Image 1 (spheres, rainbow, N blue to C red):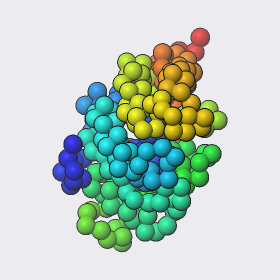
Image 2 (cartoon, helix red, strand yellow; image 1 turned 30 degrees about the vertical axis):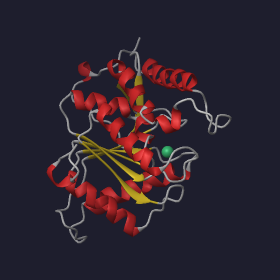
Image 3 (cartoon, rainbow, N blue to C red; image 1 turned 90 degrees about the vertical axis):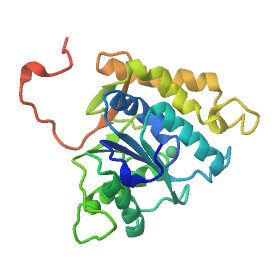
Image 4 (cartoon, rainbow, N blue to C red; image 1 turned 45 degrees about the vertical axis):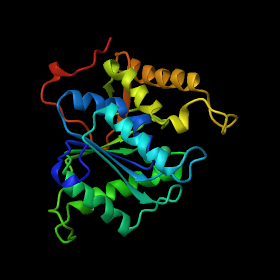
Length: 243
Ligand SMILES: [Zn+2]
């Protein structure tokens, strides 16, 4: 995996608050995009120092292993404070620098309403960073770039998705990417009363993906919300059967 963003161009960039967020909400989609030959990338905003289990260093190693399983071409983490992500100009510029280097056509952000404040703030912070990245007046070391499309990964939001990505062929590696975070999810004594067992995580992961797959008439799916209304050229090519 290239360490420097300068040489890699991403078609799809997923931005998330924590290492393992992407694995939980859109890992199957990244696998599918990579299988289509698209360049995929992940920017995590924090390093995970506030977690009850494992150290930031451990999570860093696990994140690279997960990235390998997901087939992403580039992954890095900023060092925003875990549990205290803020939408500041400084943070918007830090993210815009990455967007300008990777030049993604699509950016995936977390859905804007969430239980964890870091997730909700990452949605607005990421959106504003995409906007700022396109402004000529904001000077960084790379040319301005405005992503064409922003979509919101909504798996943990109680909201009807705009569309679902069929991840049926990728459900197993998707799960393996999540389980690459052994320090977080493997059965262990630390925090045993606080965390769910590995077998339960597998059950939940598959059940959630099955639920969203059923909405679109496929085996397993990942849900997304887009703010824009969809535009259609040909009614006969609409992809999901009505009855
Ligand atoms: Zn998270």
